[in-house]
Length: 235
Length: 219
Image (cartoon, rainbow over all chains, first blue to last red; front, top):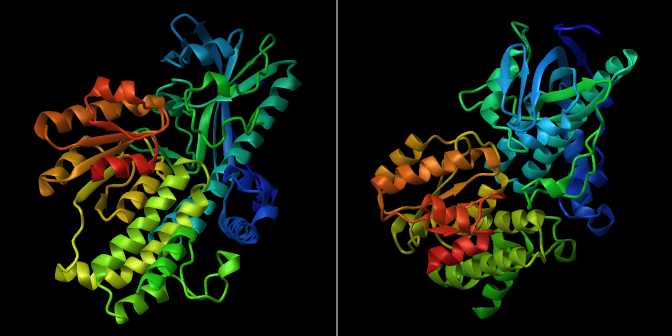
């Protein structure tokens, strides 16, 4: 397994799968129930597909230490306070694949423009489609990490991102430092937020004994999340 | 007069923006909020009556239905669009002072948080209730909120956070506001916050949904 080497994957726009029925479900609709929504969702998917630039990458490092009690892990001499939920999911992991995935900034810019000019529904729909597309790209990277691990008879965990499961979003800076000096198309602002916005970052545990566990909405405090109980897992 | 206000309110409630708008399908080809507001003004109905009796009342119904989960975000957005089309005709009356806003409301998603849909829904509901809303956007540092309050000393404030990890930033912002402007009411909202957190950080009101924020402001 390549350690400390950035592996990047670029997909074509048509490789990204965003299904209208999933977008409709996030908006509490079924396409059959509303022709107008059907039209809006399909036209916004077409719009998104015109200019998204899906790209992502990952870099694998050895995990030096995992402490479930304190909710921390150490990679490349950097201590991450990932919280107890994530630390326990990473139990037995020998490596951490740090990843990023993005679709570029076209969707966020168009969505913002539409909302500012009064096309609120269209802008909101396009934003949701952008999030779905970025998650699809993240899933593709996750899948590639899995293949890489499986080649070496290793298993992977689910993926975890700063900002969720009590992992402080400020730790993005440390996470991104693991990309070393590699130029990646995602940057962080002072608040540790990613640019482009439609990006996903995080880490995946790799090891002989690790187990892939689906996301559990019951463990999450975000009771109003639109994804709650709509997806049992993200990959 | 009542008839046109009822129709106008219906258009806002069900998101009929103008005659050409395809939504809602059962109102295809009919006048929407745009045309009906213009007609109401031409008929001599006062702008204040149009605003309060038709538009604000309709947005109240929309907010209530959203709270009761009878409608969802898309319908609320269509209603807000219809409301905006109507309010565009009332702008000259706001400018002349014939009608006034109920007050100013500063809204922001706190530093470190990019989520804005909840903030935008609250903004729409509060604008729809007749308030002037100053939207500072997302990932807003405390200093920017304080500067805006300084420029608008009577404003009420709304802060949103969606991540458990940015609730701490909300606390910092609320404490800073309260130490400098103790009498400015602060409403907080967002998935991870609750009544207990509101009390802990010293905010004035926790709004679980947009309509409750409107009700609090209108008290």
